[in-house]
Length: 604
Image (cartoon, helix red, strand yellow):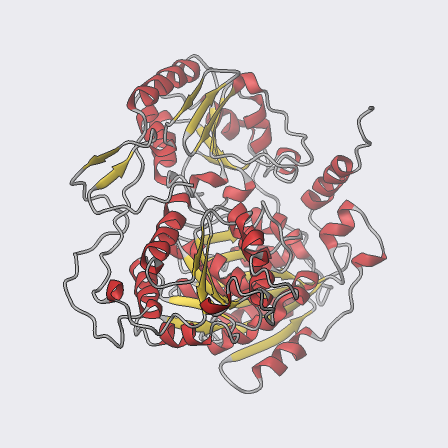
């Protein structure tokens, strides 16, 4: 990986060359400080804290352990940094993931090996979702390296590199800080690499080092000034020329936004292209929330056989489609069943453009390409007119009888009315993926879910982190009972942080998404008294309100209370639904993914 430390006037182009610029477009830039730091604060721990604050982090999620306690003291001493203790390392990692989705970068601190290996699953998820996370581990005393000693919190060998080797596969840079001489450089390299690569990094700091003053920490650190990479200009012009020729001769072209729009910072450029071209545009499921759904040419979610109504028909019948930042895996392709043809497609990745079966153009940044292409396309709204012509408005769920058991489609009819610019939706892995996908997001409404990694339980920690990052929004979290049992403890941390999230716990008695892929007795779970569990966690401390709802009347009352008298409280609404009450999309998706999973081995 490139580990260049940027100086304020450096720009790095795609071919690795560096040139000077006076651009004001640096994403992280402020005035050069000149203040001298007192010796008691000129420590490694305080330097790390100041660096985290500089890149926009005000909250760090942690679990204490004997190897990181001194470091935590120094993070707490930074007045602009809030240390949030989590119930376990996995949730601390998930919280940093949710935080990074809103703030652009997140951080977590755990102890050596027992903490590091516990958080590893969350870091892998962040890597898969292209999120810059700074995972900090309190490591062994620097004197113990190379001594042949056996330490606690290890697997009983004198080799302390096991944790490092595990992190090497799920982080883009690893820094093991064992002495103060190069600590400044290693920390700065790690943080800047996380920001440049939009991936997690690993920093291990010897437990005896955070409180020791060193001359390299005697002044406020020069703030990062990370300029974006530049496109190869010749490659950009050639790519735009070829793409414009390809699309301008098409009769009914469409645009589809993918999840890598975020890492490419190309959301606005994608909308600019849609505005200029007049093309109908859709999003892949994992890109929901990346581009506005109130746009006049937005036609919904393209997800193959489980797309929103009439969207797949328009996309798959187009004679040309441009995908910006797609990820085609077995989940997003519904078991590899998309009806797309390579010869009709332009695939735009964050730094590469491929047109049909060729040519391909490297070192072309997605944002630059989309902006330049917008100026070269002829206006063509044929695909949108076709969509508008065949579109039939959504039907409404059947009216419920008085006190009839609540149906999931009735639940989400009322959820739709709760959405606004002041809310954000977190959807857990499971049927909530499909039900939340059908929600129409108003302008400014946030939306997050973890599709690539799909780790059940992710949403509890992610809700904690996201809500902490944007306290002005009220988060609506939709979590199945099976997923909730994996990570339930950190509702406690939400209460400690005085968050006002509304959690809808959808209790259908098991792992419903797994049932639709492959059923078995292992998909049935022990039913909890979920509201009783939350009441026990609440224990009279903080603002918390819980209720169970069995029918539409009770749901309406619960929503009104949550939005009214309990608007400043964490609200936990347990929704009791039938175990077979699933979206039709999950039924279709599950059968196709099951078929993909059960393909026999190829003949040898």
